[in-house]
Image (cartoon, rainbow, N blue to C red; front, side, top):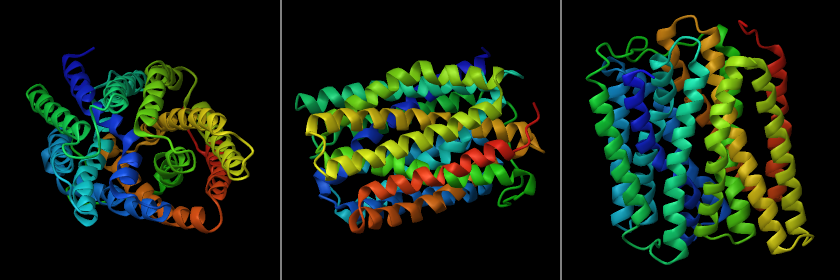
Length: 393
């Protein structure tokens, strides 16, 4: 492994710690602000809006290069989490600093894959993406172990200071410092197209479609999958952290395996696996919600089944790195990679915001099971795309 890639791996380990916070955010909103399902959907507007803006921010700052923009992203994450961790802002101000934290997260997302691919050896891009994703998951697992122990034994709470949030801020700063050190070894930063210029190409149309579908599926995974456990089954922060730990343990081996599979089995087969996993998981989630509402399952059984679906759902989302490999495979200009990934993330977040509000309404007015049945049906389009795309293999 090249020295530059080793340094970036250390940065990813620090940055990945923030991923462990996702498992308790639903509990934070529920316990600190007592939000309803509709409000939970509304929170996703300021949380996901940065994903829409990310492509414009990255394009506008393109003169800085990917790594320096990643440093800025970590600073924004640290700022947002520091305020949320030290103070108890009202609901409106909480949304402001959640937005700042989320802006840093969403700026970094496409940069991660772009930097990883640019530092990879030729022909080993999938392996590198899988390995780095495994490192990120392992770091998130450490965060989840810490939060599980803290909440289970009363060391942590959602009153000030919120220690897990401050730990996220600290590791974001450490990640930024490692990235600054990395700049010394990457003499010519990878740059995208001209700053401020957003490029749409018909050749990337299926990538855009996959990104848009991911916006729906990701929103269900992040928001409404955990909400089944938190709202319908009453799961607490320690239980959610435990589920993230289990997911991380599995992901540490699963992600590098998927990375190797992309290099050996090919992109199309992984696209098929990606599509089938979504259909399977969300159909089962819908059936579980129907059973809970009908009183057909006990609380214990519901927690076991819901936790299993949570783990499967998170593992399914990890297959999404195949989109980056597909884009690299069809890319016309390698310097467009990060900018195009960022544009795809912006597209998926436009859909994600709309989906969150619509799903919150469906959950409340029709029933939670229909949120998942709709997503399972929509995921059939992933199968169609997997069959249709042209891949240079």
